[in-house]
Image (cartoon, rainbow, N blue to C red; front, side, top):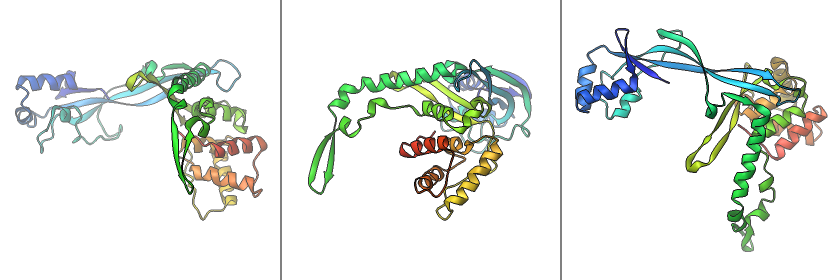
Length: 309
């Protein structure tokens, strides 16, 4: 959000800069600032936006494509510079005006836009997905390997009927260094399931981040975003039979026009409850329901080691 200040539709500086200068004019006195501007009729505008994605295939593989991530932004009239009823308690209160009721883009007066801005590297502006997944896996391996000396000396104290037992951490977690990131699993599961009949970018976009976090730790990953949402969420209700769940997931696949679509919506974690996946997996193990062999293998592997976004 990038606000700018206006007075009777006459533009001033960006909102934060304008507030800082106006505060300086009154010696930083919040009460004087409030008294001066609550009667002036001054209002500010801000940029509001959503994400837009574009894709270009580079080969036949599931991850063989380039994704462009853009912000689609429009500038709207937001509201008064100050809350007329309550004095601000800090300058930060002025920078983040909680008294403003942000109307929908249809209702709020629009000044400019839409403007499309390519996101920077940290926001995954231009990403070759196969290269990104290789980088994601490499960084995960390097970060885990860097902790090897610490983990080799770590001990878990287990309390049981026979007393306390010390277990080396790596003995309790033998696959610690073989961890497969959820982003890579998402693509691998697509490639070996019935969903592979379609290009992944026809159904999903990827909200990518790649930056240096606290302590200079590399933060890299994505959140998958469905390009089409199902009409209703599917919740894992206890009194619903697995056969009824099968009917529901088949309806979702038909609605999405994609086989096994429900599974990937489930890993997203919002549209299909993970309990649905566990219930179907239990039904598969008990022989009460069936899925295509390749989809059953993906689901059962997920049920053994779940991942969610």
